[in-house]
Image 1 (cartoon, rainbow, N blue to C red):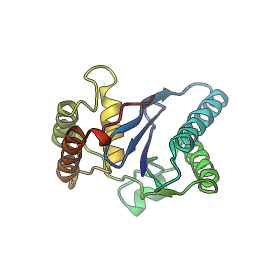
Image 2 (cartoon, rainbow, N blue to C red; image 1 turned 90 degrees about the horizontal axis):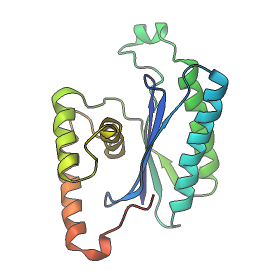
Image 3 (tube, rainbow, N blue to C red; image 1 turned 135 degrees about the vertical axis):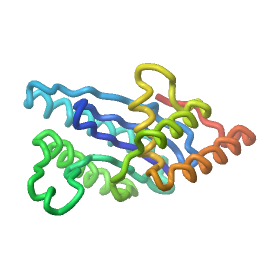
Image 4 (cartoon, helix red, strand yellow; image 1 turned 60 degrees about the vertical axis):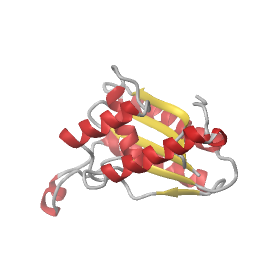
Length: 192
């Protein structure tokens, strides 16, 4: 099974992706694509290319057995309640990313066994994000430095970690990593 994480950052105008296996070994390294904020025509082309590349990677690494599970965060409506939701309209950029993502998902579904998981609604922040980040650093899953924030958020999406379940997700990740270290057959290297 492959777990594919997709994160659209509306503030930074960036798309981040990550592919891991069921043992949480990295298949395709975290990737960050910053898109053009100023020219919507150029943004459309860049977004389409980034999303198509994500699905091409999934198709490339799909081994024909098991399934591909896509975890994602594309926030169309961050409003906390129905009344605010009526006033909030997603940006044209977010609508485009969502539309292109779903179109590519449908095309991939015709070729491979692929499942779209419920979207991650609550993201980690504050103390929970700091604790999660520290554990990822200890496990050498993210690199400390400039790009660490997007990698941390990508792992949050990949593990579907929320404020209420992130501790159990980290515990499962640690168990899996220990088993991979002890069993050479389960060890995999980062492909790309």
